[in-house]
Length: 97
Length: 129
Image (cartoon, rainbow over all chains, first blue to last red):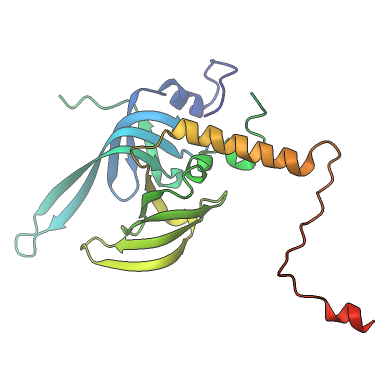
């Protein structure tokens, strides 16, 4: 939420500044991913995202066959504050098509 | 316009949470607990006090607690209520704090005399001297 005095990209956080008001992909700890519109961020990577979809991935191992079952659960949230210490990476949304 | 970013909280997004004080919101913790309640207080470290809280775990087990303190580092998400204009709320809070600071320290930089409460217990030690 800082005022932009200089629009040059000087440090990694400036790259996130370029994504303001754009849709982004955020990878979080605990096998979670978010896709939403970036409204605000700070130096801790606390973020405010709008129109967010959260994907939680869990891997279960079958007792008998020992095969990995990958499960995902999704949630949709209109407006979310994300605490920065859970953020691993921030990126423009991956093209999954 | 005022000096934005003078306060420590205004340099980070914690001021957004602080602007939601008094409102009902949903807080998700790192241990997958969800707490729905009224945000009573929030400090610069995002430590929060939640009143009238309903705590729900992953299994859906609910428990009611009247007052909870949560250490900020345990918070994963804060769901901001739909009907709130967050930019306006943050700006309003900033103005309130600015006005309070001005009233307290306006001009001379001296704190005003504290109000004497009517319920103040008389100091018996003084009477003895």
